Length: 338
Ligand code: 5GP
Ligand code: MN
View 1 (cartoon, rainbow, N blue to C red):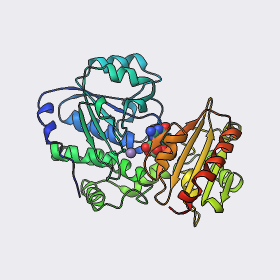
View 2 (view 1 turned 180 degrees about the vertical axis):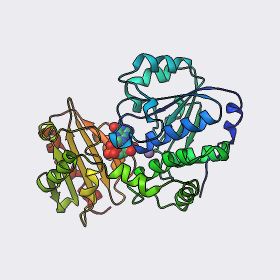
View 3 (view 1 turned 180 degrees about the horizontal axis):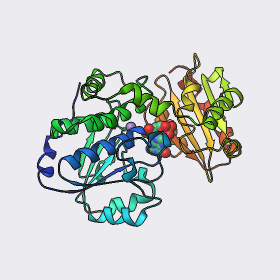
């Protein structure tokens, strides 16, 4: 059980600072949970805090405390650009390098603020940050954020902050089903319950707020669009833009879908291809030790974790699937024997 030591940050926050909290493109529960927890914490600590993410986050996070204050770079470019210039400290939460924040990358690199990375992805781009707090053997970035707060000022961690941390841990582990074989994770969760969180309510708020369209899209994807290739221990789903439009697709509507493909007995690789405006978004999940991170990194301009990753294809959808089939033949043994 290794815990990162954040004590060297104490001095930095002993006087009032202007802080900008940032997270990655297509922000998820861990990204949003981590920035919202730290925002509340640093405000209580006496600092001026702003939050920015590259693009929209899913509606199922819109109940979270403080979410209305998050600046979306796509929409508030000018404001966020000025924050990159004026802030004393910038936190990079839940991503391992500036390439993950899309168009804000240049502003980040050019900022003279002290840049602090807190993340659980492999291979952090160390040279892009002044301080690097990285540990891949944790459930989520939210877990690391909890450690940071606990070491700086534990008495400030209230119920609201704890709910944000819980959301980060819960969503990054698929409700405690992967990436959480750690005693530490559950010790932290116990602390969050001690602080008064309602885990059952949070679970409902995040997972039981489907629109009718989203639920029907899920049904359609599973009954009509799932291809199972037993020979390759692989299952995949393809959704075209036209199909997504016919279910009035909203950001986040395909979240979690790929995991269903992985729930078939014997399946070790699951993939979701979903067609967007100018690219195909690809989500990968694996059950064994086949690294979908490397697969995404080497063939889909993406990355992520050993068992959960994502990337993009700029070929048309048919060509993308054709390429994928070719890759399956190449990686067959690695997948099947993983
Ligand atoms: P998802 O399939 O849920 O979109 O992504 C799963 C995980 O893969 C994310 O938590 C993130 O860590 C990683 N990931 C997704 N897309 C990308 C990408 O385009 N680049 C990189 N480096 N990582 C990604
Ligand atoms: Mn994460």
